[in-house]
Length: 232
Image (cartoon, rainbow, N blue to C red):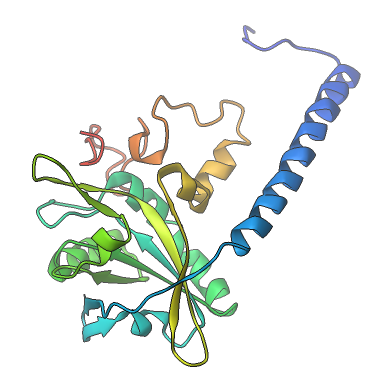
């Protein structure tokens, strides 16, 4: 059997594994320290009255908390004139519903927001079988103010995948506490954590999930590859 990897005895493998484990533990400790530093970031009060569209009518940012103190908002790339949601964002969104029941019991609400009209979001959500709350920011500045939609010199708008976190205090004041984009939200796609354990790893040529050369909408894996708007 041909393999690109050296084939060694069990004691040799154990020694190599122990050497890697030292580095893995150092990385875990570094990630723990980074998480603590993330919590220590200063906050910004959100005073602007944003209005989002939902099936139940207009909603303010405070409504998206749904009674929780903490809100994680996923910036789902879906431009107003797009035919469907971004492939990479859909890949990440496939992981969301399973986490919701746990997060809600930990005082955290999670929603998605996109600039596409609500009718498009609802149709795509139904097609994909998702249950999480998805709001349209059509007609308001939210995406632009939080750098999820970036105007370009040619008049077009670049959509960015990302997530922003907010806190609502007992007086109802809202604070923006954190944002991350592109590979900064990659950890939210749990399938990648499994692939990092797999013998061939991620086995892709793209730099992150939006540009991966294997990810599809989960109902399109039997179809030919289709470029994401963000990757075209």
